[in-house]
Image (cartoon, rainbow, N blue to C red; front, side, top):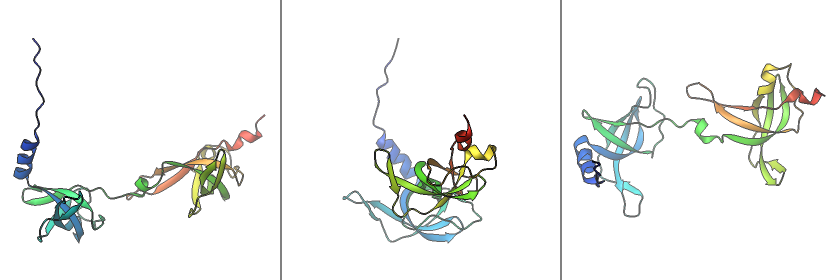
Length: 190
């Protein structure tokens, strides 16, 4: 015999658990010390945004940051804080440059920097098969993966269009590295 269990709205139970646990929407004001921040309680306004809930301030601890380094979460960041054993806890990962960079973009080789490294300039598509320098773009260094394992390098001609991929390295914080894969020595093969 099969029994169908009906779904029920559990928002009331969630609200009860939230009251018991101590859940608070907060806005980060400033770093207090290391991974601890001064924050103020906020609530949703009728317009859909947030507004200050009351005049008190809280000290919140960001578990996503090391306890022995100065915090990096910017002011005016909103978060959900939990009361854990009398201490307000948030989990806000620091913004990395990896999140801000596009995963891949067209670029033009503007210079050879030696070995497999090249200066490239990001491009924008202006039509079918036509590109122009992206407004405000600056030259960045990108490495040709094909040259890292083959030959002496510096084989891609200036003006060549490539598709550059942004990859975060394993540093702390991670740094964006740029690579492309151009068969540099294919032009010499018959």
